[in-house]
Length: 571
Image (cartoon, rainbow, N blue to C red; front, side, top):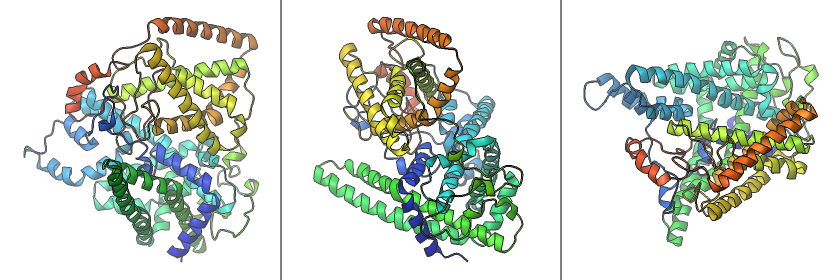
């Protein structure tokens, strides 16, 4: 029988042993919205009151909930007294519905602005939800399982790379993981309709991602059934662990941070600072300690419950394939796990992602490859911003100062990181932080140059948390840092490998064509920059967007509190 205090003690010790990597894993989870999203809410903090007089970003202070959006599609008014069933559900089901559909809020907002209603709106909503579910599960569910893999491996050996969290994407196991996590989500949604069932079953299925982390080939129904057996008789004790973490590391720190923020705000003569200070302090505490501490503790809980099942020779134990993930964690230096000695029931050795990582991020990039990567990243940035505006505004906008489908700030940032930071690539944490600085410098200089030479501001972050003259902000820097890590460790090696398959003459010809088109576009855009609705005339656009704002809809790209978003850089 496991002991809660001993479990937390070992969890804290294990977390501190792999501190930086564990904190990085939890940060990725939080920023992606997979878990711990409240920890980064201060990064997404936006205050319309702090916008400059010539602010170019339209923001709506309050957005409709997903439940209210659905009622609007159905043309149901719960206050008119003609829909008693929906009125009752509005008070009871609404919180669960909004929680479960939280990852798909942008799709709800997009469908709201499409003007569809009634049956047509419901059909569009179903299609949008299917697409949103696929994207959310493919990213959110996989990251949740991958994070469990990291913390399980960190119990067995030291110096674990954060690449371990991407294990589910390797060797095609992601599809089975997606199916299992999707089935778990569907079950929770259905149990949520029974009100009390959601809370109970969320604990019953608590071990599913851990089982998939150990054995990504486990059948979805078998993983769920095993999780239920493991949690039988342990749900209340698991709840107590959650409660103690909340009281000790969420409630008390929040109260102290609020008091400190209020005192600092009063001393500075700016009472509005108190909320930002309190949110920042509690967010930093969670990012650098609480989240990793909790994750390591629950990894230890899985190991204890796993060992209990093995001791009782319970059904489903064949899904446990890595002995090192169970029992008591060894003291002192941990030996490496021998992949070749452990096999899944189906075939092949249980692997570690870092041992089979096929992308060589230390490779050399010649001039032609860098030029083509510059255009690839520029095009990807353009696609990102266009898609962002389609989702948030329901309209196509050709973003950027140029007419072509490229935003050179993305290409320049990616290329500079590949050229300047090569010596840091062995440390993803260092790559992330230095990339934030490099890209922020590029973005600040670009904003200053455009405003000085064109007399127009293409973006303004003056309402965002930790901004510098409205040209850069913390959220944008974090997005750039994560994007550069994706470029360094995945996108650049992958694209460069594809480029290498082209003959030298084909590479040269492609570079010449792209450079010629880009140069012509740059020359024309120097005298006739891309301006207009949704690009620079935000004040006029705000007037046009007022009806939508009055309806409580989101305008432009301002994130809702706690929601993972990107930032927009139209250049």
